[in-house]
Length: 121
Image (cartoon, rainbow, N blue to C red; front, side, top):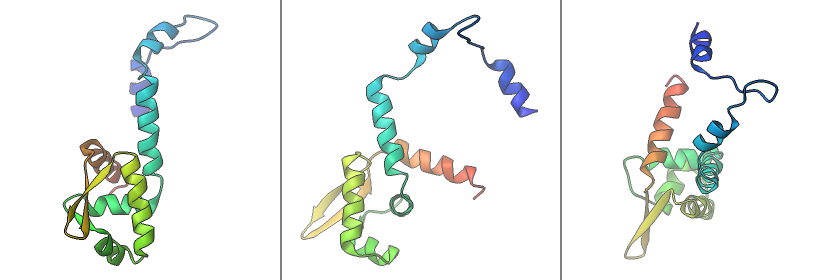
């Protein structure tokens, strides 16, 4: 029943009939936004990084603590944090010799929470 409701709302566009390609093109995100979006999905494609992000939902966590939490080496955690920093999802602040990581992309937090709901949890 839901599929029928969704199909009724959609406009058909066809190369052999009525084409809405101009309208479709107007509604597409810019190439820059598409690239940034694919970076987010690339970052979220690794289960370890997703787990790290869930751990960071309400905490700032140092590399050693994250290593203890996940049961992996600090170098592995650092490498994963480097990827998350590259895609501007997390950042860190220094406190003496320790680096504390936190999520800076609030939309990624929301995306993770929505995705978790879709798993039935």
